[in-house]
Image (tube, rainbow, N blue to C red; front, side):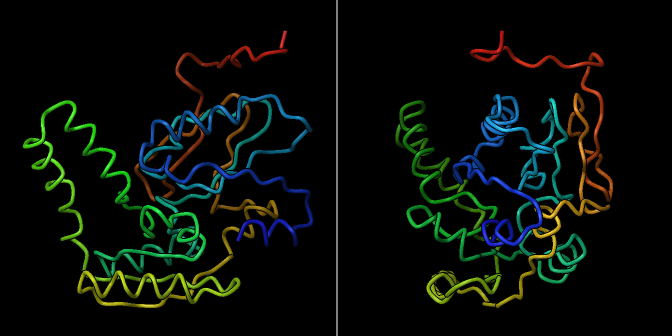
Length: 244
């Protein structure tokens, strides 16, 4: 979706994809995003626009440096696919316990599952191996059984159709996952509205604009995030190679 929107944007937009698996470790995702914000740019940019929401607090604490950092106000990526916080809140209120799927997420998740905002099977396998090393096989089996219990809280699978390209294979995968788990299945109409405004620079109340030398802070209010001065009142750009 972002590539399509960037191609039609009135602005010059350079897109950089981050590894999807970073979502499983919010602290690593935050560090990776901050690293890209801090890195010297080859060109002069007006802003860094993040295709992320709060995402398990992964974006909380990010600091803008020389240019503003902009992100949609949302709890997770599902808000971006549904197109607004209102659509997100309505869906979660009327249908709690829903597992969400989209085509592009499925394309980048072929080896570890297809759902948004959930611990993937590959991540669980990796965690299991670590538990075996630390605690032994019996304890590892128990811990992984507890971790896998999250599936019991789900009753519905929803495929968010964005209307970009052929979505049939991804939707079929979502339907098969629903059948395997005896979940209800639903097809939802997604919306590019929020993402389009992100890449077109139409940053209204649906977005947080973090000025230089300010950080993202969670508000625990309806607006979700705000910009604030980091502790100490100032920030320092890390010394980068060639930045003497």
